[in-house]
Length: 173
Image 1 (tube, rainbow, N blue to C red):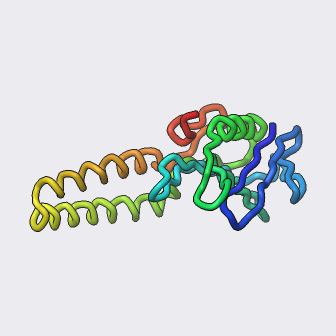
Image 2: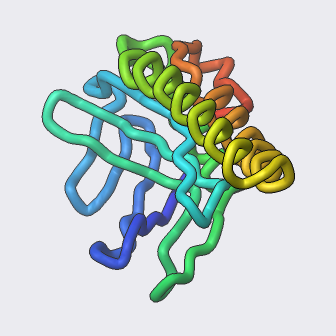
């Protein structure tokens, strides 16, 4: 199985190939037995909400994959089906080895960021309702809820087994 990824304009296309031993790239072969962590996360930006990432770590190297590929200036394409297939195949090959499988944010970040976001959200709503009126405050609340609730649900920190990757941490093809 092969996956071609380019995260940004600052790098070239990177080709990753899964074989019986590991992940083959221009940097050599990253052996499955050397993988210490696989971390899946939902990582939307302000303008693109369907971005998912996978960080594959060893003691000395990190590979970052995304379901979104840079094409040209301000143009990205989604490759959700290929990303999902690669991630599932990677998990099958890693099997029940010693790699930690994590989904969502790191716990410390999650438990620090979520309360701060709730306090900020409440303060903004209070100010908008006081000075902007019910309509503006209501629209702002709706937009934030539509964006924040899925973000925190998908990024809830958790571990999982290779055979049961959480479905909400992979993009819909």
